[in-house]
Image 1 (cartoon, rainbow, N blue to C red):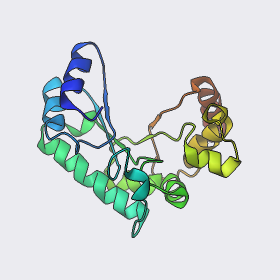
Image 2 (image 1 turned 30 degrees about the horizontal axis):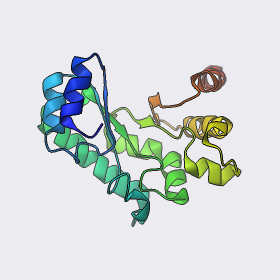
Image 3 (image 1 turned 30 degrees about the vertical axis):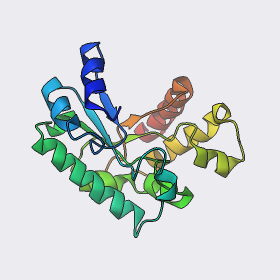
Length: 188
């Protein structure tokens, strides 16, 4: 949610985490509300609103611009009283990004994470439109194979820095299977 009052009601009803697609920018009371509630928050990068974001996909350098924006959101969350250990950053794949922007962000997650000083990164490519454009699969529910590829690829690109800690997916079983295989290969 992007709304502090919805956040409060959800946490009081048992929600364990807040996923704010605006990174706390939509509602001036969001960050202070999350701080009061003492739950983790996902600070996602997005320009505009869900209605206008697709017209805002031009960046000077998408990786640097998104990284800088996330650094600012992390700082704002800290200043509002949310400790770093309760913050998760999300580069906002598919939110105000074009095809190349999405791919560059996935390729450079280790750079983003290193600049955020190890704030956990969450990636959500699951069934996104750019996967349909890449594969020619128009039905979102049929994009699970592409989703697994887009989730595993950044993990394969890890250097000394980890790329992401949380994968947000629709088809959990397929992603778990793929990450288990990757983990086994890496551990040999």
